[in-house]
Image (tube, rainbow, N blue to C red; front, side):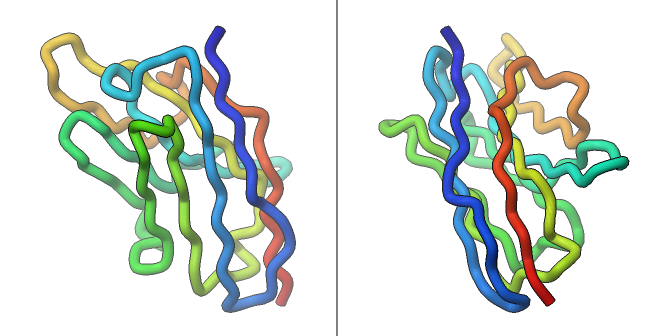
Length: 129
């Protein structure tokens, strides 16, 4: 059974920091890239950051570059999104998702939610102004 479980969200003040974690079970991180997405009511789920354990490549949305850092511990099947200099517009439910990688060994880091095979339940991050 595949499970992705997020933790670490909460309430933080403007300019503060927060770390959210995603523990993955039931799949290999060599075969799946992990992405962090976020969603606010009435809007589409949007990509925040993605990591591939095949080659270590990462990708960030433009407005979080320099503030957010994605990292992973393959041995612990855990992916962490460290968020700094948080702004009220970062407020959302954050989800981690797993997307299967190509069989040719390359990395694929889609920044839209449709191709993702598995999702966590989501965790609320609220930044107060």
